[in-house]
Amino acid sequence: MSAFRVFPKADKSLEFEKAFISHVQKYHTGDWKWNVWEIQSGPDYGGFMVVEGPLSWDQYDSRGNLGDAHTQDWAKNVSPYITERTSSTYSVYSEDMSSVALTDYADKILINHYFPKPGMVVGVSAMLSKLKKVWAQSNESVAVYSSVGSGAPEYATVLRLKNGLKELSDSYRKPMSERFEMAYGEGSWKYFLQEFANNVESRWSELLFKRADLSSK
Image (cartoon, rainbow, N blue to C red; front, top):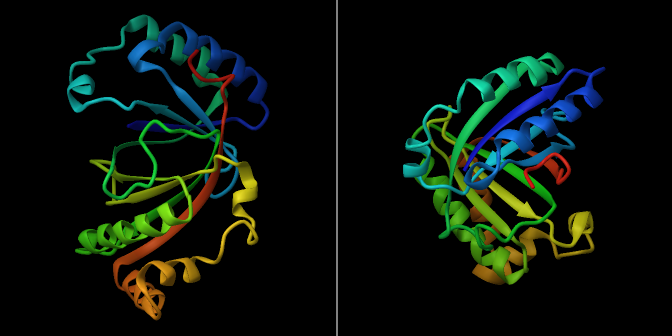
């Protein structure tokens, strides 16, 4: 998957959406369609995440130049309404760590971003692999991605909220500590938290809602 984030100017949101929709329908269809998410919380609140894929590395490699018309349309019609702030990432889906199929999507998602301490990438991978069993037993649809060539090493867990935001309620599922010990035995949660402290440098989370009206048709 590839993704980038854009941030409309505060007073130009309507103009941005109109120009963005026009650009998407002209230039981003077929294999290169865009799925667009509005960021509802966290440090990137107010921005949009644009996702391409899933695609193979060969497809990305052979994409070629998008053409002058595409570039000019973005520069002249969309760029005037966005800030200079942006980010771009490539990520690979991990079937071994995930409790949901790659394309089994939902319209509301919660992303947790995990940044390993130096030398602890394997440790974080092992931690997330353990959580897969807990997610599966609790009927949580979680897709796990690892970043590639996109800054600091990162794992992202994407909780696909198939039943909406009510899945975040404390009453919807038992606490993670209870569910983890049901899967791995008494005292296992304490050991997991120690692993977390040893392996993870930082973590942050955000809610995103799908914007079908801004996405490729």
